[in-house]
Amino acid sequence: MKTLVLIILVFSVLLFGCTQIKTDPKACEKVPPEYSQKNQCYREVAKNLKDPSVCANIDDQVLRDYWCYREIAYDTNNSAVCNQITDSDAKQSCLNVLSGKQPFERGR
Image 1: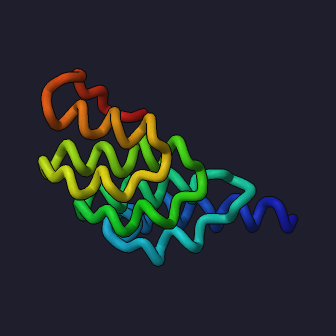
Image 2 (image 1 turned 45 degrees about the vertical axis):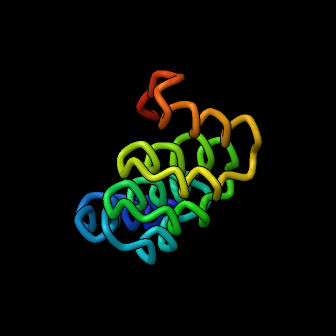
């Protein structure tokens, strides 16, 4: 029963709160960790708002550096966003994408 209630809650948040989730990082905090969608939620909010500060909430380094910061840097054509990337390879990739030395691939 407890599992069923939890599943219903998650689907309610994801289905009915879609608009809020897409623009409100606080809504991502409501996603239960066992569904491992919290990081993806933060990424979507960051992309929709074009706000790299939201990427800092993502604890998966690859998702944060390659698919959040780099994507926002590309979308906003702002190399300062690349400087927020902690992984040196991801940072260089970000700078290469913005300078045209490397093609950009949209994240998953």
